[in-house]
Length: 471
Image 1 (cartoon, one colour):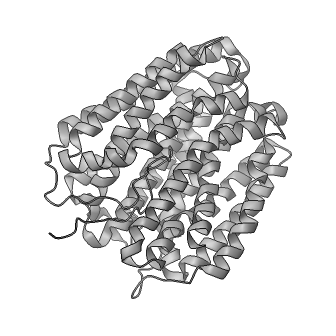
Image 2 (cartoon, one colour; image 1 turned 180 degrees about the vertical axis):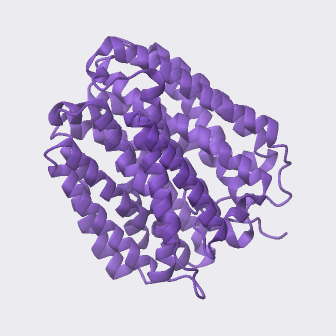
Image 3 (cartoon, helix red, strand yellow; image 1 turned 30 degrees about the vertical axis):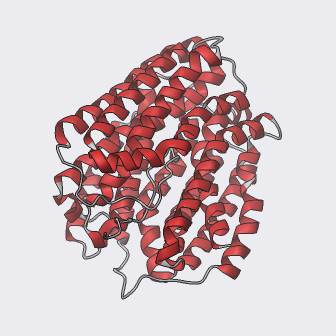
């Protein structure tokens, strides 16, 4: 029952991070929204989630993991209801931002509950079941989203969360025991959280609305955030973690990888429907090979990375991913799925198989033993912030005007430029991995308990660490 409650909760948040992309053209037509408003439908959710996810983990430790997880589920469900009945684009954007707050409360507690409740001898298997079922949810998500959009309508992408929450909350309250962090947890970094939201929000607004004064204010807020974290007694982003050169490099690689990945999936979902003429269901199904490959093979990739070190898997994976997105240049008007879409999606999936699991393992290996949870949380937040900024910046960099997604020829040209930018970001990540990650495999490699990596928005949050048994 604990596994079921946590899987339902985390999958609910995961799906609303990904399936909304498939619904964007229909949302735009129904609410008469331009491209900038559709960007905010995506970024409004990611903004609050990325900014507050570390705060959510801290609150779980202080106030009780079950309590905060349950509050997050209820909050997320109510925000989903507001999304489902939103009569206009601005109201939908506001409801999506509220959804992100709920996601920030429930996401950190999902895996933390399993780690706190299960006996150490059973925990690795429990986490394996949790990550495997979450991977199945990630694989099914785009297909389910497309079916809902083409069937009862895009509003059901959000309304479907209500019955899930109605099952999840009673399960959590009845079967999940309350747990808190041992000892006195550090205080919450309220000033850091506020400055983080301001910095990301202002920079995102500057990219979407090309308001450079706002961008300058966002940079200043970011500088104030860094200054606050250095002085805080309990920072949400501890500067001491970045004393490790390898940890710093891995997080910069994460920034480029997830910027490329999130930006690509944002534009390809529109391209397949606006230009190639696919239905929402067909566009969602087109993305299945990527997540299925990650579901089936990411565990083996993580074991390989533990044996040979992160440098080669990360470099090769980023280059494969770059090649995969470039192959999607073939997805133009009347694109055939088998010859124009599937090869690129499959190659992208193989690249992600090679790189995502070693990336998570390296984050854990080069973080202090007692700070692995916050280290993976920082890595997760950086990945989400990278995706947020990519979705905001890509239309500006590629000349997508507000109405371009209603003009197939112009969108097709802008999509080609977007793909080149995404491939370039993967290439930069490959170069950084090859040049700066000159570290051998650890004598006693640290492997995450969470071994299935299918989330296309961020690495696993607090995946736990499992050391080899002594011989």
